[in-house]
Image 1 (cartoon, rainbow, N blue to C red):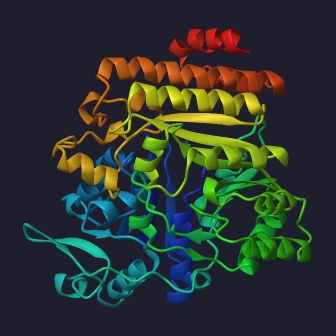
Image 2 (image 1 turned 180 degrees about the vertical axis):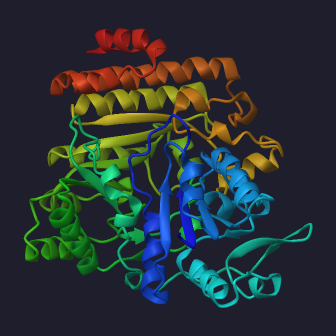
Length: 476
């Protein structure tokens, strides 16, 4: 029997290779500050409801992005009706849209959840219930009071960030997520996992909900980061780590201290890294330090080859020239770049997309270690892009959350198409063309590596195969 069960439900048919660290942090926080460990985590898979039921929970908590919201609601409805338990929901979706609290969810946790869940559990353990009167005293939640939705005052972020202990990875069934995968976004499969060394971001890109979720940036100390890396290497045999921060390298001093901490723990050189950077913050000194740390590939949100569109998406904080320069610097030190582009932003024209296509070709021709991902601009809840879409009537009340898939071939939905200049049918064609350009260069990189297992994965979309091969032969 587990009094609290936390559920990691994902979209059916899509494998999730990254552990649900958020649930691990919640469990570790309760253990550290409440000495409560009567907790279980149920990961998505077969017989999810039956596994929850067999644990005989009193409280069941769900985490939800907009992409998996339909699956979570379906499971939550069954749990609520058949098990008669208290149900909680947290994560980016309810944080951005607290007013969307489903009738089968008793309480929604808004934003950072550790302290909020701690206070809810303290109440429940003391009184065996969560009354409306008590709920009104807890910051950072949403709940129903009859027909009304009640949102309590915003909770302050946790400081210092090091006061949150390492996530409880054992509870997450960590071995399930340590199977060899492309954690480094390279043409190889190694034993790897994910860590977070910070929360938040100082920038406010129009398409990103990080600021709404985490607020201002907070950082774990370099010693804490080095200690967690040591744990992953020595206890779990990890060879690759994705640092899932929205902004890892806020300053080079911290990177230097992390390297020193790894040296002191004798793990420098034992593990390689993949992480996200912002192009306008990339310098030669930073890349040299990351190379020393063991970084083999970086992710860059370049978004567009059009200065005008880039200014719309990122508010003028970064230029196309800075994007090019970041890729050049990284490549000069032997670090590959995983470059993310989006097409279909409201002000974008066909010529703007052509500029992105030219930049994609340029980047992928520069190094076989570079890769470009192309996505369709999607207004996510909690972003300025979402607010604009709602204001302009692009987003209605009846929302199909399934359209928020990460797969661009699945997410081009005419009901949520936000571009103002390109007819939808024509946009579909230029989307396929852009994907084919990126795919042909991806094929070139794969052939360079001669990884037939990865080659098979290059053709996940059969209808693009002819376009990819044709573009590859035309431009090689």
